[in-house]
Image (cartoon, rainbow over all chains, first blue to last red; front, top):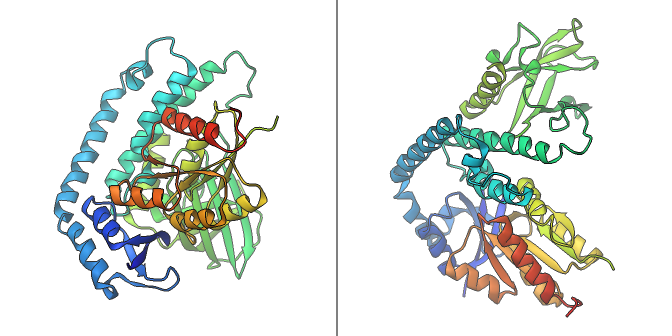
Length: 272
Length: 127
């Protein structure tokens, strides 16, 4: 019997599996991101070069239109649900009785939040659906932070302990500046600090004393507290500032619509 | 007495965190690995009582790791956690040596129960 290894766009591998397993998974719509196939687990080739796999996977492509409609419906449902819970108590949202135990809250939270974990979405998920899931994930997480804080109320805790501060790493390596920034919830300074180069111009301000020149190449990673999505982009230094804070602005060169929407939502949410 | 080890093998950091949280009330020592190769190194360092294994990972896949561990004759109870819950794949995983198959999305209490059961069945567990 022949076995196959299937690799997705993130080079994650499933295998070895038989053609029957591949067919079953494809029929259930669970193989939507197969990019390469191997027959020995070592050498991978494009799917089109393995006809039996290509044939098994084609059954899912016939459902593309149906999938697009389903995603639009799912997005609307999540948005409607998010609107509906604004005025509802956490007991109602998580469906737990009053005076529920911490374990009951946690069980209810995990059960509910898992539906919206953005990492579970298939790669072809629309940016709108991805954002809706992230909003739902964030809304539930924020409520759970408050609930956990109530349970911890009897213990002394540092002020704002549930919120992290923005973390920043700036390193010079391989002829370019590498920036990794994890934005704390509500922090939009890096998108606004340099009025000439804001998020509207796809720019990020990096607070740093690093001596750089305009046009220095950059490699940027931006994380958002409470979100799974990160932005990875190459960039170029487009501005240098010394006041009020020393630093440099980078223009992000690889932003797609989903990434811009992520930044736009982050800024909008922090300003409301 | 030392707590038994549970090794979570998943390339998804969030999933590992959720599983770790789900196991907070289970008397065990949780370890993590983000790939099949990292898992193998962890197992060679110290064989865990229970292993929670994702099937799709970069590099060495979950099924490859499963076969490799079965071939080595490790005593670890291996529980596959995957959303790929077709009958044929579940059967293959069990045939390859898995002791259980937990379907994503999972409820944390379900994880707790399955891991508690696996810990009780693990070699060296108190009767």
